[in-house]
Image (spheres, rainbow, N blue to C red):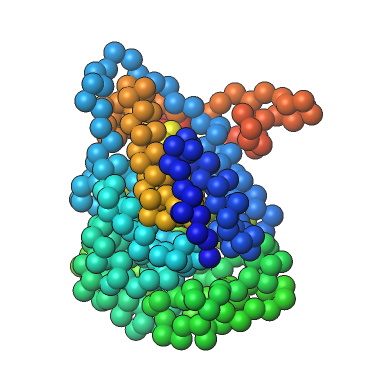
Length: 401
């Protein structure tokens, strides 16, 4: 467990990537890999960043931005910026206070905090911190346990439920397999009664104990009928996380979803899946305003948030950078990550000619031209170039392919 917060110096950090470098110096290698890694050859993990790096904003001119603000609403609730925290499990792996410290940072900044099913603190403890709290649900083999978790979230005062639909089982995360990764005894899935006796704590060579545990707990049978049942069982706003195909987005909206999270699980599930930002515009077009659309996977700066807004998103979820801040400085480190992201976003909005997040939807987004690197390979910035999507008619708020 790290005590890095004792040496935390906020003035040393100027970009979110700085926190990752600092966290790497204090976390055990296996924990660092567990947070940073993706599935398979990590192609989708890399492409999440490459896809953002390929995009360019066309700023608007002669717009009054003297009162530029990043404030907005998410699911009808005021938020200081169009950002919520992503559901990341086992946060006590990186700091002894875990989710409680991260939730305090979210509360202080004024954005929603998402409690995970695999949180290392309970939803009741986290909701008591005072942030706007969303609860993320993995569909369990024990259906009544799933509904019981939703009831606990409702009773604790959560303001939304987020059903993750892209994890019938965990993807093959090779870093964890090579490390034989298992949870230490003092980090548990707080919503499960077995504590340190769970399969997630029993290390085995060449195997992820966390993957073994989730394979026994998660239901690969999750279907549209289950989503409909969940919709009937809760009156809270319902988000569906893990959508990439426009047809799935359309169906989720028809089933009564209040929001969709366009996500490939941070590159941790199907390796080779499309980058989330590349799927965003078509998903927004498919739902056509029937529900909110958020995005996660690869967000590392305020400019990234601006790009997602320009492509039609209501907001984004922030995952790994918050963990790096938490590892580096506890609640203060997480708060610094969010403050820095807020400052970057306000700067990006104003320089793009937008007085607020809503105005970003009038921006045009383009693919950067590709230029050969020294090896002759076509690249866009630092990102590996891929075959372009077919051209299509563009309009404001949609990408010019």
